[in-house]
Length: 125
Image (cartoon, rainbow, N blue to C red):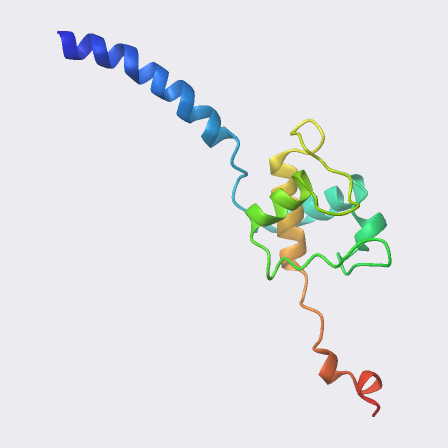
C-alpha cells in the first residue's frame, strides 16, 4: 500500500518535470513534399530570404545556410540564439518549432552548390 501511495505521488511529479522538457524539443524534419513546400512558404513568410536569399544561398547581409553540415537541432539553436546580426526568434510565439522543422526540410531538399573547382570562370579557364 505504501509503495502504491508513494508511486502515485512521485510519478505525477516526475512527469511534470520530464514532459515540459520533451515538449521543447523540435520535431524531426518532415520530408513529405507538402512539408517541404510549407517550409518554402515559411522561409518567405518569416523573411529569411531577405538576408539569406530565396534558396538560403546567402548574400552580403546574411550567410549561406548549409543544412548539409548543420543538424536540425543546431539550425534551431542558431535561429533561437544567433551569434551575429541576425535577429533572434527566441520563442514559439515568434516562430514555432514545427515551422522551423519545415524550413529545415525545405533547405535540406535543395541541391548542394557546385564545387568551385568545377566552375571554369573561377579557375581562369
